[in-house]
Every structure is written in C-alpha cells, then in structure tokens.
Image (cartoon, rainbow, N blue to C red; front, side, top):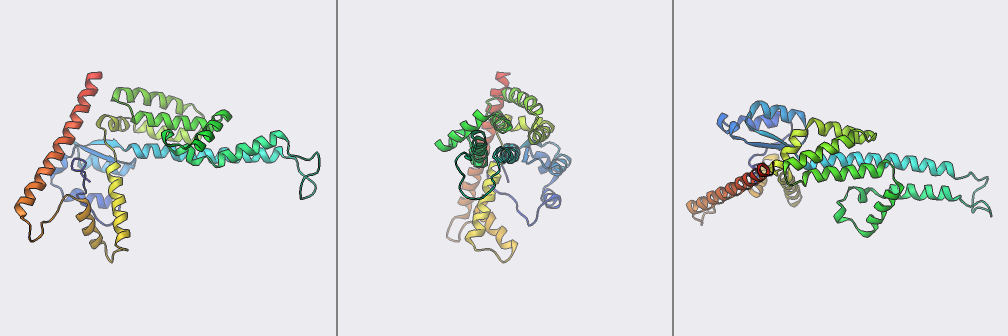
Length: 298
C-alpha cells in the first residue's frame, strides 16, 4: 500500500517472504531505492528483506502492534491474578460438612467474601482494562477504580500500558524519547513477567518506535484496506478464484479508475493524475512540517 496516495498498489495470493519478493521483483532498481518509509509489525524477516532490497527506506514500527503487545501482556496478567484471587477465596472459605443452605454461624467469613468479590471483579475487567480511558462507561470506570484500590500487579500493568500509549501521543520525537526511556526503566523493574517480555521487544525496536512518532505514520491505512477486503469478500458471498477477488479489490481500493466507454479517457486521466499530485504534495508537506517542528524544539 502507498502511504502517499493512501491506496492499494499491489496484491497477490499468499503471505510471507516469497510474496514480498514477488512485489519487489516487479519494481525497478530505481523504484526500490526511491522508497522512503516502510511500516510493518515486528516480524524480523520483513525488516531484513526490506533493508537488503530497499537500502534507502526508513523502517517504522507500527504503533498499533506495539500497544497490542502490551494489551496481550495485560490480559495474561489479568488471568494470572484471577487464578490467584480465586485460589485465595477458596482457601479462605471454610469447608462445610453437608450441602444446602448454611446453618446459623456457618456464614461465609468477611475475608472470604472480600476475596470472592475481588476474584469476580478481576474476571469481568477485561474490557475496562484494554479500552481507552476516555471511552470507558461509568461501570467500567468504577471497576477500574476498584482494581486501583486493590493494587497489585494488574493495575501496575494497566498503568504501564497507558504510559506506553502516551509515547505515541507525544508532540515531538524528543518528548517521545524521554517518555519511552522512562517507560522502559519502569517496565524492566516491575517484576511482572509478561510486561518484562514486552519491554525487551520494545527496547530492541526503540529507534523504530521513535520513528513512528517523528514521521506520524503507521499501519492504520493498511488495516483499513484489510477491512475493505473482508467486506468485499462478504458482499460477493465468496469468489471462485483468487484472481477475481484481486481484480475487484484493486478496483475498489486502488486509485486506478478505468474510464467508461462514454467518458473522456484523457480528461479522466488528467483528473486522476491531478488528484495523485495533490495527495503526494499534501503528505510530504505534512511530514516536512512535523520534522521542522521537531528540530525547532530540539
């Protein structure tokens, strides 16, 4: 996908190194050298291949995937904390010698009741933890406040997740660098194993994360194209072969709009070229302004 034009430029059946090589083989040497920025997830094979075949391209780590790593770690911590709270509630509840309603004096002790309530709040807190704070409902805010009062690793992991999101909201690369350095230090010494694993992955890609803030670019448009492809498949109730699917996807998601027989083909081509030129100038101006602003702050 071309970030300057915001459209799909190539599609092929399959996935992996071989498919990416097919796309790069169709480009000339000058075209590969003219690629300025490449955004992707943290797959090492993509970065290795791009560095070898597109030497002038700058690698950018997609912010969505970085935050997704932290959300997965947060959910793992939530499950572990729920297991611990459930075991604590079970051990605090005295065993009864018969089934049915408890006799007088056999009520659940207060400490067992509190442990049961904590386990229930942790179990049902998944969406409150992964959603953006500004999008939380009143019930989810109350649940988050309850977890904050309880303390523990779960709320610490949530706080680290929000600090990592703040890195990508920084106005300048210098601010993002300071925020990321503080986050890496906290995450490395938090003693929460899933979060420490994320910290190691982010530390290895530190420069690529800062590049995402500096250039203001990510895989958002790629995910949008993927969603359009899914909608296309659903609307067509499936396709007999991949070639038909690729043809309709290119028609919907690329900037190639073939002129109809009753249309002026030269005029349509002129309008299309003009739209491309305006889009490229707009995106390049946006990047230059952001880079100039960053240099002025430094």
